[in-house]
Length: 104
Image (cartoon, rainbow, N blue to C red; front, side, top):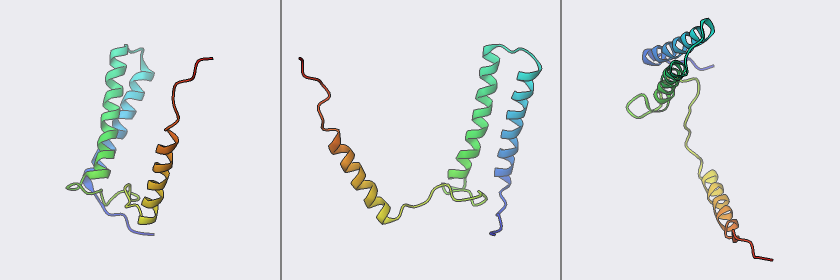
């Protein structure tokens, strides 16, 4: 098993995301809230989660965070790229079917 590298910024972002979700859950369960307050809580939750994802993808000068559990973005092998290209070409050709029906 590989040793996980430490990233204090990632740990802080994850802690903030968990705190935002827990806070929203606690508020929603403790009292009846308005639609606008629920919208604000949801926005805060998503903003924190997006911060974690963004840091994992490009958090270190445009590079993925080395402290992530696994690489999020991997380079496709040349054989996979050729397979993707051939599938895209077949899909494009299959869409040449006319979309309008002839009248009866």
